[in-house]
Image (tube, rainbow, N blue to C red):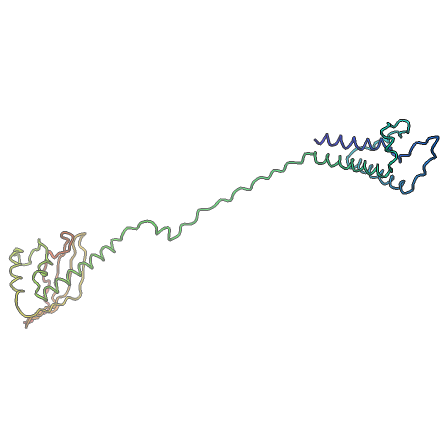
Amino acid sequence: MATLSTHSAGGIIESATAFFGSSPLRPSRTTNSPRRQENPADEKQKDAMARRLEQLHTALGESAVAPAKAVTAHTLPPALESVKSFGAGSIIATAMISALFGAGLMWLGTPQAETRTTPAPLPLIAAPPQTATAARSEPVLAAPATTEISEKTKIGELLNTWRNAWAQRDIASYLNAYSQQFTPADGNTRNTWVAARTKKLSAGAPIDIQIRELGIERLNADQFKATFLQDYASGSYRETAQTKVLLIARENGEWKITKEWLAENKLAMK
């Protein structure tokens, strides 16, 4: 398209130059009509348009075109005879507009350099740092210390129930605190021990029992040892600060007393 536009613009300029020549177009003289006087203003306009044509040639990169031979009246085609009646300035202006239009077509037809834009690389997105909340989202197993504290609490509740049942002479609750495998410290059977304790707790003076300085120690997964000082009073009988030891084991999901003995008599009064 650039070549076609260049040829079109060049053809228009050459036609205008050949038609008008390098000098202003003058009408041919006839023997019957007098010579028309040239207007000075038209002469200046012709010179200005001629200079513009020359500048247009230079802008298009073409060398100076040799002016064509002046067209005489007898060589002009009949169709151009009517054109001679128009003013020279109007004809030159029309040629200039055609030349400029052709130059525009040539510029539009020139292929523009293709601009390729290399897309910028996408920024790498770093993985967000692991927060403390995310770290805690994983399931956490219960610590053995927490389980041990919970079981020690149950051991304390068992001892408190055992002490209250003894003080209130509640035989059923008192015996229920002991395991079915309970072994008495004197070597008797459990049944013999149960008969003796039932007879002693059936009647008598009120009983007051206090437990202090309690210590609970885990022996294994299913056994604890409780050590404390026991103060006992019933009627005129008093026992103060007796060290007592109980072995407590898990039985059918509950904690029961399996053994019981006095470690040392601190003070006994009757």
